[in-house]
Length: 257
Image (cartoon, rainbow, N blue to C red; front, side, top):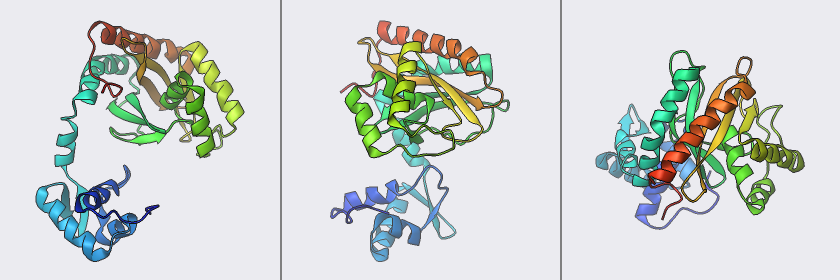
């Protein structure tokens, strides 16, 4: 549900309809769209019809889903496209070495967002997807961003609240701060069933030519079989190799203006 009133401009209302979809939504009804956006149903109906005509939404048996046109638009974003292209060979190498789920993530406000994912039939099925966002405090890539970030950034995350997702989620700021200090010292962050029971991950930071953390690489798999300490050198090596490439042949990243 929206936390403020419906926007006044037609464009803002249309964007709110698109933003109503979560990563877990396959499709939404008109009623669900109206409820999530706070728009009158008649207004939502009119705008949804225009979005369908433009190609941003698809209609199927009275329900609506995001169209491939939005994906195509996303591929035209040059900053993240360039980083993804540079990282993809390293993601593929990590997959060939581990046959686990491999992610490229960037910091997105108070979340970690996946720019790319490489997996296969031997990888543990997990719910992550390109464009999906997860909390920082209970994910391996998120801990990398927090560990390498400023104390003020950590304070903002802690003040906003550390939601408990599983029995293993760290929700005490002091304990999380110690975990982040360990990550900063070792050069990698870990998540041991902290966001999803049965799933663990290890991640390492990617730096640009100015030694800014621009992304993180991670290996994610079954918590009962994934040896995080054994895999940490592999993900660190891949992240360092990508960092070296970015320093020699700079590409546009989400931090560039």
